[in-house]
Image 1 (cartoon, rainbow, N blue to C red):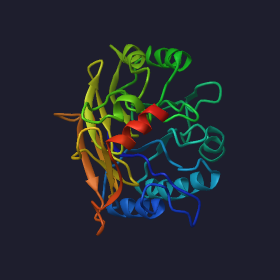
Image 2 (image 1 turned 135 degrees about the horizontal axis):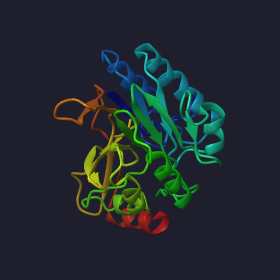
Image 3 (image 1 turned 30 degrees about the vertical axis):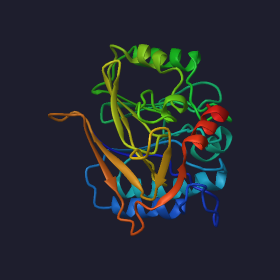
Image 4 (image 1 turned 90 degrees about the vertical axis):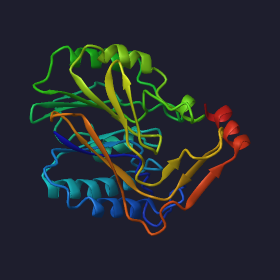
Length: 284
């Protein structure tokens, strides 16, 4: 199973620049152009913050660009919501986030199940409207446990926006990740989940949750740079994506692609210690 993993496209309506220091649509086009030589891709997973403003127009752009690209590979696309997304517009354009889900979570939350080549793909909805952090909630976790109670042919790929792990170097990651990561750990413990895919942090990060590998892919619109002083944060230009390979010898394997942007690594925003602390106090 070979998965192209993208996240945090932050698409704005036509003619608008995302508040991420870059033309989000141009960044996505550049990243997809760099990925055009990939072969034997079985699925494309996009883990949230698809639209920066939650507009139907932005989701339509995402569907046309990523959907068209995936179609050229013959691969289905699975989308999750992120904290910048809006469930109503997401559902209007992308439905459950699956092209043909075999099962969906009842209600407004966008969580669904599909199977590709014996692998089960489960997308979860960690969006908390108006907040930066994420939460799944008891109802969604109960639904996930019931889904996982029957093993899939080769295993399960679980995807959501907010990572259930964080890096201690980053002050913002400690408060803006998944709030009920412990509940998710209990839901997947001993199950056939082979990998958890997430985004949100705009950088690559690998760890474990209940002995299951967790992979956080960097953002398409920009990338967070952790070489800054403690308690500060900086984002730089540069679209990124990941390749995840499951089932082979030595797997899971993770590889990060960085688009060849002539302005890559230019600072797009930088928060000093005081501004970072204010952000955490206001939004955390």
